[in-house]
Length: 172
Image (cartoon, rainbow, N blue to C red; front, side, top):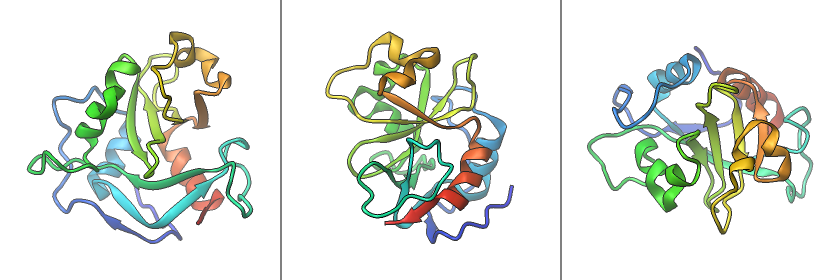
């Protein structure tokens, strides 16, 4: 996979990604991205118009946009790193709140998460999850529950998400 993004970023970790035992099986396109980049941090936050399903470039002001700062990577020798893929599953009870149905793969500095589904019904789909003040209801994490406002679908695969990111996200 080659990602020629117009968005400037730096790699989080230089070592090759090796999937940690703590994570479930991940989609091949996402693992390929991690093998190539092992996470990235964008030079400036990217604005993504989630309501449109990422099919148009957002306009300023970016009030109704999801702001993306980082796509997490894995670094096994820095357990306290806040941008580590494994650690982010544990922060604020994320893994317990979604009962292992989603993997947090990126986010921004206001605790809104970019999530990858590991459920059989929508394996590999990418969602935006607004960080709730209380754990989400089971109905919010199943099937079309994202329409209730807790989850917003951005793409049906990580590859599709990267393609949309290239065309429909702008630096804030």
